[in-house]
Image 1 (tube, rainbow, N blue to C red):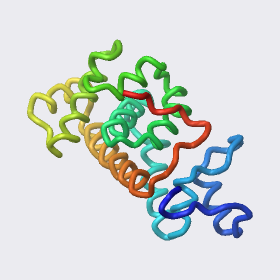
Image 2 (image 1 turned 90 degrees about the vertical axis):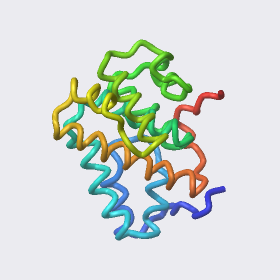
Image 3 (image 1 turned 90 degrees about the horizontal axis):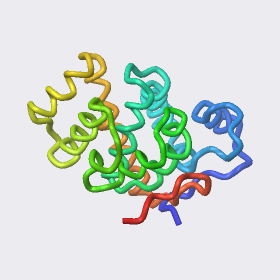
Image 4 (image 1 turned 135 degrees about the vertical axis):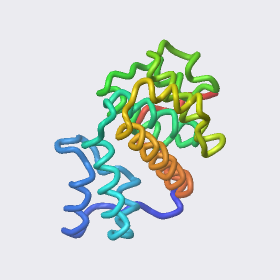
Length: 186
């Protein structure tokens, strides 16, 4: 049971309009529980929408790179909720396969699947950020070999944003969406 109950339909018109902005058009399921909980604080939800939508819909990182980062950040945060949502939708659309998605949940993600060098650099950088909240010069140099300044800034914000989402979903005790990919057992 979540610590804060997600809103349920019927929604007031303002909530319905806001939830439509959070969800892609023509999806066959209810808005995410996370979004429905956030609507309990509409001003916060509105501010979060701007950042989240900007990272997902207008980012400079290729979609597959973005989803590698999101999968690893949420896996390291133990956030089965957000990992499963992305694994079921955006990660697959971006081209990540089941083997790669599962590898993002393993202790050594880079060893768990076949990754191009840019993804190895992303996975290592996410792990360093998770463990130390810093990046070593070798990790930065590995990223720099594949990404420009604007993309590197986006990477840091993306990793931090999904760490925040992990805190939010875990702190609320959100149950995995029924259509999400189940988080792999250890």
